[in-house]
Length: 242
Image (cartoon, rainbow, N blue to C red; front, side, top):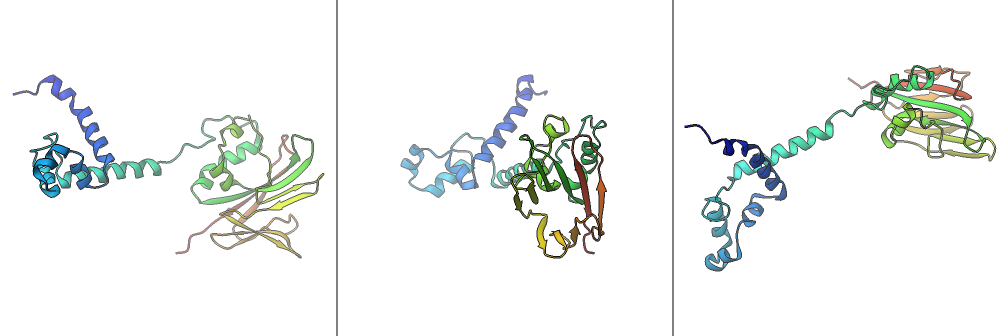
């Protein structure tokens, strides 16, 4: 005997309703209690008995989930949430036309590696701000990617500039200077070597003095750009032990 069409069409929504119901309750007991009425308690005067009757289908909706089925569906919901949270995010540079900008092109080439932790990059920028003041600073690219939406930068609607909250910031007109460590780098002000950045993952030190080597596993790349007075990128490859 074939299933009536109306019942078959209702199968999907019914499953979703069940999942929604399961999500509302932390424990199976809470789920059972939701179907126990005040009248049930008046006549039964026993909470455990009332729950048993609901579980057996004599009370409540009559279509009660069994304990193992309830927790199996709870687990399924948790797994779905985990998969969703771990799903790779689309790159901010995806589909953007950055060929005309060597700087944005360089950032786009690094974005995926920086996001997945295989590469850390420090960006040095020197340029004039909106007030016409010359500023410079060192930016932790990974930190900015984590805390900002980079699509406006890749769309050329915003211009990436150093901020006082970056690794290092200096306003040449006001003489304002700040330095701030990030989750990826510790700022070190050395009286002899000058400004240094220690990678917190592998403890390697990056020297940004152009007159000396930048350090182990680090490369210094100057990016020629018509958009900025000066741009330098320090790429540091972190290596896992073992």
